[in-house]
Amino acid sequence: MAGKIQHIIHNCKEATHLSLQKEERALSIKETFQLRLHLMYCDACKQFIKQSAIINKAMLQIKDAILQHPPQKLSQEVKDNIQQQLNDLP
Amino acid sequence: MLHTLEPAQWLKRYGDYLFNIALLKVSHTEQAEDLVQESFLSAYKAREGFKGGSTEKTWLTSILNNKIIDFYRKKGSQKNAQTYLIETEASFTEQFFATGEGVIPHWVEHTAPSDWGSQADQKINQQEFYKILQFCMQKMPSKLSSVFIAKFMDEEETDIICKEFELSSSNYWVIIHRAKLLMRSCLEKNWFKQL
Image 1 (cartoon, rainbow over the protein chains, first blue to last red):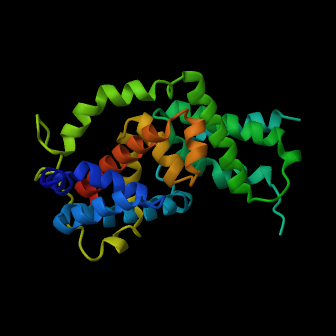
Image 2 (image 1 turned 45 degrees about the horizontal axis):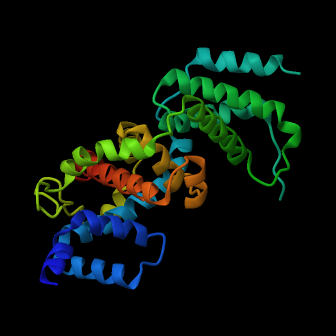
């Protein structure tokens, strides 16, 4: 038992994996216990969870950001070529 | 309200947008250009079928997404996710967590998430940030980024993604986990720690 608890407390790989699943589904009772116990001792994983939420939010905004300020541009040559082909279609 | 199409404006309005979306999903400029071109041509041919239920932009983006899925299917690059994940498991884990015989995988000092500060939420509202986010996506192995993008940018349902990429649910979660670890550390290094 002590070994198991040690394992939960130190296993950041497993805790971060579980925390990501928690964003999408309800964890089982065992998983919930496991994650809560881990987070009582692990500030780094608490940061990970917060940061994951920030990343998710950014990913939802990136399309708008790209639409407003596209960082890369199609070259004029490619644009002309596409326009030409569109014009040739019936 | 029903939306209408204005093909004469497509290139001007959405050309660069679709090009950048494509660049997130395929690594080469030429491939991205080809995909954008094919998308516009297909869209034009299919314009009679547009029902107006979505915006022009959404409709064009979904056509591009289908082209990209076909592109990857043809390349067969989503096959063998299982083998890929198994082969790279040890080296991947090692990048982030302490490993070794009998070692429980915990963060090591230089990989542990550090505090992004109380303003982290606002730091993502800057235009510069999205260049870094794009850079970090492009840096990820495409087996990971394609799934990550489908999930978090395109907001597709997990079971649809698993079907599309022929993934088991457990492989899906391994991919999401890896992609998030890579993305987090890339953003920390190139953005949040720089400010």
